[in-house]
Image (cartoon, rainbow, N blue to C red; front, side):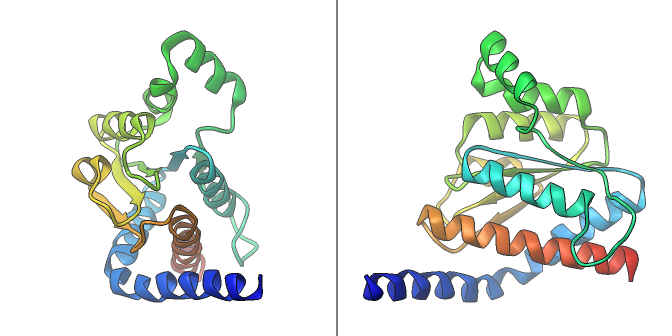
Length: 188
């Protein structure tokens, strides 16, 4: 088991180290979020499974705090309202669970972040398309494989891995970096 543990940690370290090659993308996303917050806009996030957990985690960092005891920043993770999620899935189909919420809550100038390790989740794609139609800045968090999300978003963050757990670890690492940069810029 120890060899397997070390192997997994080495894979993680390799992916995290390679994220240094996409710092300009992380900076661009951070600047868009800072601009949105400076203009009284919000950040919405959505994904499925582990990506939903990452979306919820990042939203919580904005609403609560990252390091600083500061003003709350408006952010929503669209999968957290189970009544809306299940009613929409039941009445319209699971592919529309994020699109319907984007229709209700996203405004021009907001930032919409869709998270999908494959980059091909139909409900995340539809949510991002609707967000773009509404004038939001669209961001996709995916893995390294070519995917549909990268073709539709304004900014594509591709974690340099094809392994779902390593991609998810990269997403939350980048999420933490973004939260840090946003909080530092807005609150000193």
